Amino acid sequence: MLSFVRRSGRLDARLQRAWDAYGERYLLDINDGEGSLRLRPGCTLDSAFVERHWGDDHPLTVEIGTGQGENIVAAAQSHPDRNYLALEVYDPGVAHTMLLAGKNDLTNLRIARINAPDLFASARAGAVAEVWTFFPDPWPKMKHHKRRIVQPKLADDVHRALVADGVWRIATDIEDYALHVHEVMDGRVGWRLVEDVTVSLPTGHVGKGNADDARQLPHADFPESGRFEGRVLTNFEKKGIAAGRVIHDFAYRAV
Ligand SMILES: C[S@@+](CC[C@H](N)C(=O)[O-])C[C@H]1O[C@@H](n2cnc3c(N)ncnc32)[C@H](O)[C@@H]1O
View (tube, rainbow, N blue to C red):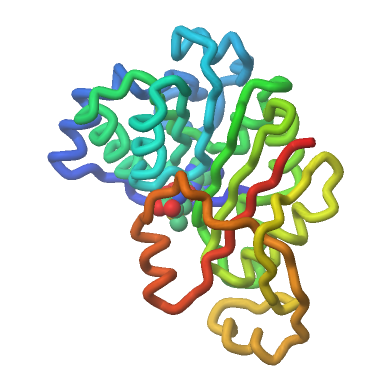
């Protein structure tokens, strides 16, 4: 089940120029053919992949669903001694990330226009130091919850990809998605949540348009993590805060 539907990814003139100028430098050629968002068979995320695409063995952070790329570009700028990989399926986002990377002349960032779970399914043990999934698409309708990108299979693949003590950081402003993350991740063998705060959440799910009904549901306390200080405030987070929603942060360590 894919976590996205393909939207028209038409680029305006500015983004098309960025794609043309920086595509060769930043975009990884790992797709299963022209226009495909699937991983080319035989391609694996391992230490040889890092060596081939970055030319060194620095620790790799992979962000799933980079949107406009503000977070990964800021991090790559602040940590030239680390490698960064942006995964995104929406062409304007991919182009905007290349634009920011090119303007800043970044050498430690690469971008893959790929269905992120495919890449993690190919990952070898210990290839990745950190994984980020910030403000994933909420898929609010009950019948669409199965499209949410945080799923048991992805969790197992991310776990295998991570180095010992590596971390998967997740953030969401959607209360029902926070419960979903707890259900997928808490008690999952091999993970330990960094517990900094306690939040109260409904213990049942609600569908689109029924978020207010959640108040009537029984609640329970859940531990969560403090805000990741390495995250810049994107439009998605700003919108959530402006609407009065609580931001839920999770740092799950691979143990
Ligand atoms: C709500 S946006 C958040 C973007 C960004 N993380 C932020 O905080 O601003 C979620 C992004 O995930 C991307 N996405 C969804 N499913 C994906 C997948 N399977 N692989 C890669 N990217 C995906 C979407 O295209 C979208 O840009």
